[in-house]
Length: 100
Length: 187
Length: 312
Image (cartoon, rainbow over all chains, first blue to last red; front, side, top):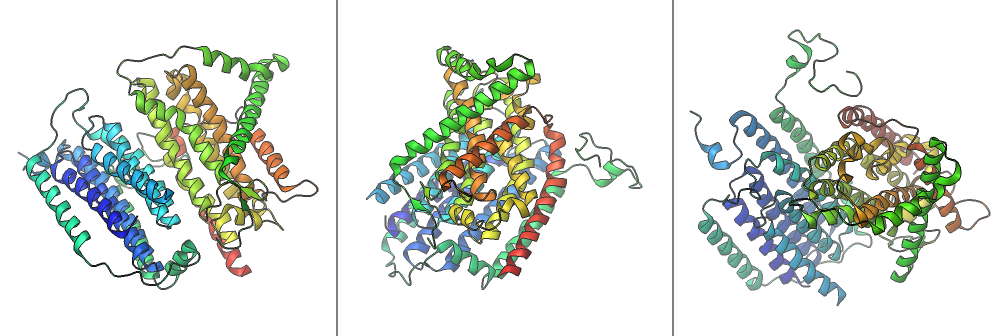
């Protein structure tokens, strides 16, 4: 377990998440992709903290990332609910269409 | 040795279950394989000696994914398990971009001359984090707190379709409120 | 780990911890059988009911349903037992503990939210309407009990200025936390009862939906699920001992004995409560959780924090 290996795993998680966020059509699946990207970020930040500068302020960054995830989820769910109620759609492509 | 083995096992679990999210065709399996990925990363963070962050990651993400599964069932218009179909767009470009980003990140990881470690971790990492949050980094915590509170309000405003006028009448005087689902404390 | 008051024993003792948990489960099940028999007016014959039930379930053939998600179903039904075992790893038995984690309190919290996943998965896996409705009922309960439970765990941690379970227990040498944080204790017990899908929180297994989550569970799966509920009740009671009931502190008896005595006593009360409290409907309990329990426990936390600052 070195910094490089940790970052490689994080990069793999990030890329898988990026693929999902770009390719999925359903709003909730796009959110899953974003979550996976942030998952990679958590691991990368934890790796940087441990292998480069293990002082407490690095941990604060991790907490901020986790907070960002919760905000993303909460707003994502709210917007998904709103889209579903107002437009009756669950897909990003349809949400981008102008309503007739 | 045990650390190295568990790190690699967890790494494989994290990446594979992360990939499984977009590969399985069951909404529950997708949500919970993402939860598994998060648990694996949380345990890896534990291996990197950040006990609090690691355990909190597991705690929050399991809860989030339990809610996520509900939303998946609610908002996946078509059930991919009953009706196999492709729910993706721009698959080739997305794959190309993802692979490109991975290659670029890997190149960066391997080529950058990473500096040596500066300083040593505190005796009690969790206590140090607490001191930092309640001391020099308090501003960050305050900001996060405010953002969270705003998120709660904004989320409810976006998602709720009934306003106080629906509940209390046009003059806001109707008591008890007119709710389709009465609450438990009789408001 | 700073000023650790407990010694970590080797991993082999995990078997002993599991055995103790098993004894507590048997105790709770026998007690419940006794109470059931007394309610039915059948005398002490209820004591052997758990034994008969176990024998019946072990021999029963597994029921299968169409298009069940067997993997998730098995994970869900065996998960509760796993959670209980993970929780007891951080509970110190007198001065011994299996896992002296510096964030043991958060560990308990992380393990108890797994109930959301496991109970819902048990309901989902069977591919049956009634069991899925049960799963949703549990999640609705979860939304109401989880935040109060989290903030209830904050109070002892603040008072002891530590997230380590052993340190929290040691901080109660003079005065048990239950004395000056009763609200947090009651909310914690509510949470434990809820994660065990017990007593007032049984609508997820309600007979109005043909057994809810357990509708299609049969044989060994059902045994493990029901055993897991008892085990969670026992593990929650065991965790309450170092958090609120003074850990191993007590006269005459050694610490480990006190832990077991207190755990059994609290467990007995929780089992007894099953017949004393009405079932709470998820929709009604939602508002109780957010409007009553959450503010109450937050005020409790504030009081504890003020006292903790004042004492230093």
